[in-house]
Amino acid sequence: MLVTKKNQYALRAVFELAKHQGKGPIKISHIAEVQAIPERFLEVILGQLKKSGFVQSKRGYQGGYLLVVPASELSVGDLMRFLQRNAPTEACMAPVPESSCPFRGDCVFFPMWRRVREAIYDVYDQTSIQDLLDDDRGGKGYPL
Image (cartoon, rainbow, N blue to C red; front, side):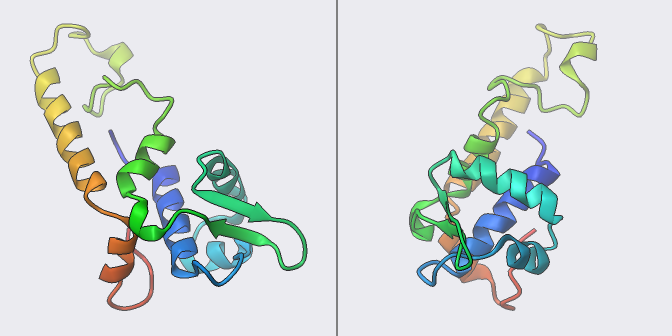
């Protein structure tokens, strides 16, 4: 599983929402500026994250987005699983499309790629959004 730009942007957006948790909604323009995310792409990502139940939106002048799950209860693994929900769970980790792999279905490396994916998710699952906030030493909030 490669970490896509979308995954990075989503994690940065959730991180920014977590920095402001309990202080009211945050405008997309603020998140986009502070986290260096293209605003139009961020609109799509936050729309998708609303479906996760992690994020809510509020309309109007005082509106914006809120993180509704406590940062300590939301793991990076939860977020990544939501973002990867349509990807095949047994997808190859090699940087070659499975459709063009000559060993598809009979690859000696597949068990290793599965262990790599499990190790990555182990780290993700052990890292909460609160952990990222706690690790933000410089206060800039650029975790990726």
